[in-house]
Length: 335
View (tube, helix red, strand yellow):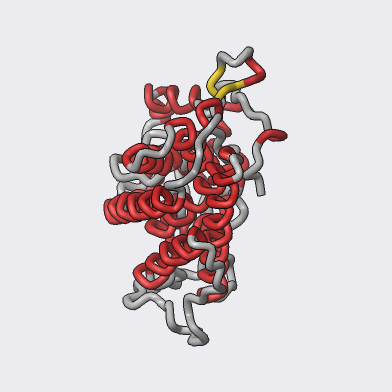
């Protein structure tokens, strides 16, 4: 199949076009770099950190703790504790590595931790199955229901990013930044390239696999209490920066402690989900088995195929598939 067709589901999930509220990879990076610059950390450090914040969706695509989510069947408390342990450990490594002059490793650790803290603002521990349902619903209808597209998610991510950067600036106040300004130098291109300019996205095949998971959602609210877990994530990050490395628990022995205070009603009508764009790009993989692409009554199925020729789609395709300067052997943050 043509490569540009396979790009469609990727654009639907994380590529383009983005709503003004979308907490997508580019927004993750922008929030991170703006807040980093605001607290006076070195530009090269901020940009390398921002690159990693963006690339966490690619490099840690299958690690749901990186995205403040839980596996299908995993208890809320277990998933939340995994996210807490992640940011605690990464925060501690930021300080030790920065003080040792290992600035790239410190920037990578910060980017990875910050992505998780930002993602909690949108995902609140939901499974990939529920996330895929709402993502596909938004892609194929006019419903603004994707967790990554909510205004509250962006506001939360801005607030938490600011708080995290202020903690980092305090923790790194005495660091000697000698040599940090070469952090984004691309040594493979005669020192003229910018190693922080480009960043990678998950593949279209991964996007198709993700969207297809909506079929396995039982319709029940899989999220956790966003206030309790979100606040605890920031506290865990601060504890890691301080070198406490204390084992934190979101539930304190109560398995229901972080259940959502107002769970949404069960979603019973989940049949027939799919549309022209995703059916074409994923060869029908994401559609419910009972629904052929041409029989879908709403959403993208009612959209003219001319959408494929729109300027935003073409620009998105170009951005997704221009050659990437990716050097996997030089990325210390790869899990």
